[in-house]
Length: 403
Image (cartoon, rainbow, N blue to C red; front, top):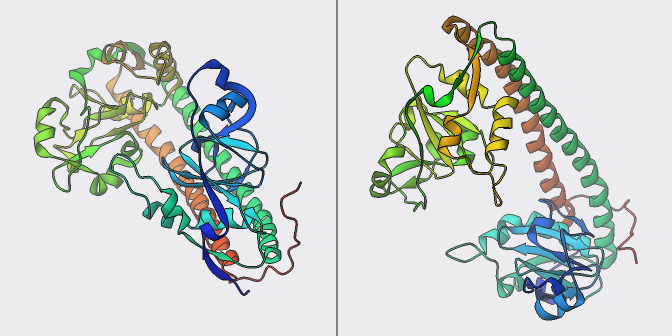
């Protein structure tokens, strides 16, 4: 395949978007209004959006671009791509690439998806990264003939659809596995022979603590634990961000000790991990709380209970009046009712049985996640090879964007 490499400005007109005022007459019309949250992580068509504008909303605060326009998120995050299937408006978190030459927008949408990391590297800013119009205009793209563009886009439509189908299947299996794990935990606590109820606050050795409200990161200092780190705290221990020692000292109450149970209390409630010895002296984010229990308490069992329906029902009630995002208060948490075995030996047995089943589930989850990772790698490699002519797609038929 013979192709020229051109800057995007030679092929597209770059248009900025906007957001109208909250006035009711600007919203709820029939004009789709795209924002980065309407895009998927992979390139695809976009027809409907979460919010619509009226004609007045467009005239006073946004811009409409035609069908077949490539839409690119240029901040929070940079690099999500879609192609409009209808005329639509968009906000300032996106930029529109309106074709000025004959070609297939899908081809360039796929190409921009494959260049996601390059695009992010061009972003500038102190508060958040943003890809400017001038930087976007200079991005180099491969530009074969329009017929070749259509053939490659058709080929990628078919092949990426197969990959997406497999990925959707693996995601469904992961969801079923999560449901199965919760059902197992529910059954384990419900069938305890010596079940008894107690409030969490009667098991604490000290009151739960929130963490650092506004972190400042540093190259060296104190390891800092955020909500996402709780997914694999031991595995991420060496890769945590740091905050200055002086800042951590201001939040001495939330300094971590080995064996503390760390749990997310904002947004995704109940995500938890037990602090390993290697993270003694670390500190936590405001969205994480640290619970320290009396010596006779099996912390592993409390952590397992946080995955049960009983915990999540109580968390739902405690945060039901939150208007922005669920935020669990420490007093509410202390009053949660934990039903578990009163017999210490039964508790220890239950810890072992839950660990045995969860280990099997963890291995299966790891395989499914690895398969999703391989599918994502396959998609990236396939797109790159197709748009650069490394594979022959001569048997694909030209379709283009339907009118």
